[in-house]
Structures are given as C-alpha cells and as structure tokens.
Length: 217
Image (cartoon, rainbow, N blue to C red; front, side, top):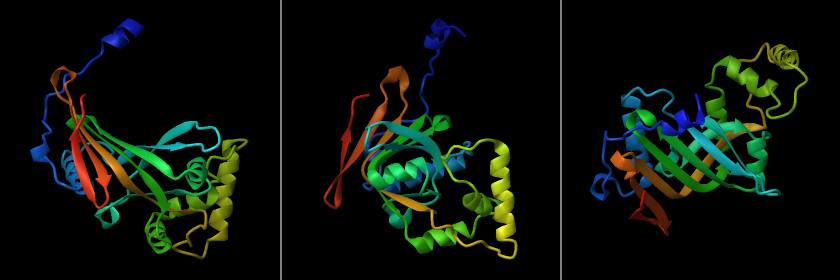
C-alpha cells in the first residue's frame, strides 16, 4: 500500500449520537453504561485500554494496552500489573496517567485522565489467587520489562517457579504484583459522527461535582 492509498483510507461514522441529554451526571456511571453496551455488542476485547505513563526524569511518555478489571466504588478504574515493571516504576515516580478505550464497532472512544494509586492489598491478593494457576506462576516467574538473553531463560524461570510452589495452590501473591486504581479528574466521551463532526462531551471534576462541556471535534 502506498502513502497515497493510506491517506485515502477513511470511515464514515453514523451509528449513534451523543447529546448532553443522553448522558448520566457521573462519568464513571456513564462509562459503565457504554462498557455494558460494548459487552452486549460482543466487541473483541471490550475491556482493553491504552495506558499512558510518563518518565519523570526525561518527560518521555510511553503506552501499552492493559485490561480493565473493575470499577471500584463507582469512582475509579482498576487494573493489575507488576509494580517493578517499566510502567510501575514510572507510576511510582509520577502517578499521573491517562487511559484510552476504543470501541470501533460502536464508533466510540473514552479518554480518562487522573491520579494513580495502588489498590488495597487484600483486593489484589483476592484477585491474584482467583487467576488460573499458569497466570499466578507467570507473575512470579517473569521479571517484567527486564532484558532476557533468550526465551529459554524465561522458560527456566517458569520451571523453577513451578518447582518452588509445587505443593501450594493457590500461590501467595508476589510482593511486586498488585492492583492500580486511577481516580479520574477528566473524562471525555467521543462518538463518531458524519463529516468528522464528532460528538465530544467532557467531564471535569469541580470539588465533589462534575462539570459537563461540549468540545469541538
């Protein structure tokens, strides 16, 4: 495909509208409504989102796709990871982060910005021990984001972990693994519309309330 062909690719969005009268006053409740619709539509990986973090020293942003695992207290977004990973180290130094959910099957995306904090340890342990055993072993075996000499090294770590915990089921939660909770202060709902005149509704926190504004596409 040439650059000209690539530049000519475009999609007309015309499935839905998004008006101020359509949405709930709380953005997390509104997000749950849209997530339920994505689940009902049987979209692939509806809980997947892009997580953006920043290196505090260099200012370099980085991003990766992770999976949403809950909306605790209807006021936050929950996922799990290795605290020693690159994103874990970045969040420890700079807890500001952004999430982006994209559901092309519904012509929608949601952008979330807020402050990240570690989840309650009891919540992290309960979730960790509910995972398949292979996932539990993998969390212990993988030194996430570190350089490995080859694939066989990772497989050896897995075998050593299996031997270490051969008589334990479930495994204990690793101290370097657990949940993160993002508490938002800015949430934008985007609905694709024809002629690129998309609907964009922005929620911004004002004390205990949320202010809703319409943004130009």
